[in-house]
Amino acid sequence: MKDYHKILFPYAYNILGSSEDAKDAIQDVLSSYLSAKKEGIQNEKSYLIKAVINQSINMKNRRKKISYEDVWLPEPVATEAADTNINMRDIASYSLLILLEKLNPKERAVFILKEAFGYSHEEISEVLSATVENSRKLLSRAKMKLDPAKHPVVVPEREIVPSGVLDKYIGALRGGDVKTLEDLLSRDIVFYADGGEKLNVVRKVCTGRHDVTELLVYVYEKYDKGLSSVPARINHQPALLYYNGEQLVACQVFGLSADGSHIVQISNVIDPEKLRNLRVA
Image (cartoon, rainbow, N blue to C red; front, side, top):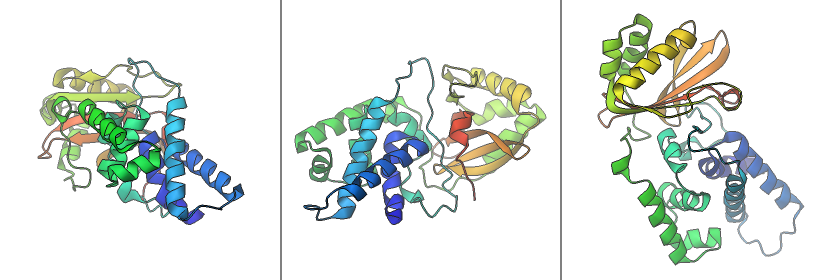
């Protein structure tokens, strides 16, 4: 059963956006399967994938709804980590996971299965116990909600990004070079922050080069100045991890423009619950 965890994790995580919830979904399915009668199950792998997908959809539906004014960010996964229990290649990019929060759980599942895993609508209908037509409609609605014309363009999730932009970014913050920092940001940059239930952070999305620059300088001077920073790859995107001694206290994930020259999105995760499982190579 341990071998299945690597296969099942990306399905659960991409639907739930949480490593902890994904592990719980997988554990629930495997526990039920081990104690169930196996008559009629011809393909164990397919059966477990279907069960995990539907368990994840149910868990996503049950999750407490957060008001539109609050920001909920996915739990980051270090895609360079040497974790042999996770198939890192199938983990969705961080920017995509943020966009997927616009979808309901079934729309999200259909989009992920079709676009990320290459399922046909016939296969999706079997997994979700739905009709092929319903699968097509769910995908169509999902794509309308995720219209790329309405959202920032980020570097493709598996493209290797030069470290120069992040070097300039952290150098500008440390040196108090506001002009250089502002020049690194796209005009319509979006900044998200998630401190969870325990930490008080900016609760609304901050947008625009000028406002985001002011916020970044304020946050750095007040909270991050004495911290060490380490570059990382989080969900296939460039990131900075901030440490207070050996304790990880913040993770910033960056979305870059198509040519990699400007930062179009910054996701600042400081929720301790979402950082406690983050392991880098």
